[in-house]
Length: 309
Image: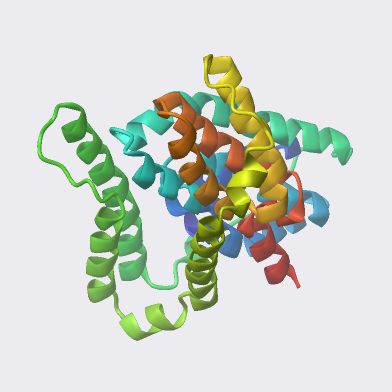
């Protein structure tokens, strides 16, 4: 991932284009490799880009946090809440559906975010020579090829699976099964499987497992349903539904963080209405973007802060 990132940013020779390119890079990586992965590998990369181009460190880290959150919106595997929505909603062809609704708005917002942050931080445009040597970051060529092939294979397989779903042909309904199988094959073929296991972020995995157990317990008490219903659900018009979902997502994601709220709202939506495809995509969009409002809005923000500390 470092090689891909540095190969990309080394193509740009001015600060403004480098900033926009970095925003798109972080966002697209998050969309296809999960935002929490980019939250872990992104800080040293953002540091490297900032130091090489003379950009403020705070600016680059905030750009990283915002970009990976925004970018993760546009695919069902971009973040945990999108995975939940893709599985629980029963959306037909989720990868194609998410991209159809969200790819263009996401890319537009990544560019706008980079420009706005540049204005806020008074980043002056200037010509730069980054001097990156991307090849130096390939520590194990065999594993790098395997990893790159694995990412491409996951995306292509999910796409083919969606096409089969659209045409009513046999396909895999359990969406997470596809990356799981490919990851298992990569694990067996990697040059040092024990090292792979050792460097997995087990703390984050345990955090999500315990969080979902806790959230299910809280949901069964009925308390959260009462809180969410404070914001009325205007179910008679698409604009009303979109507004209700967006407002609830932005407000409650700050209190619960966006992944737990998405878990709650999926259950809530099932009880108040027959959710449309647009409803589910709106939940994905709103709960994800809500993560950029405060530090506690998204787990990826916490991961970046922990890494920086």
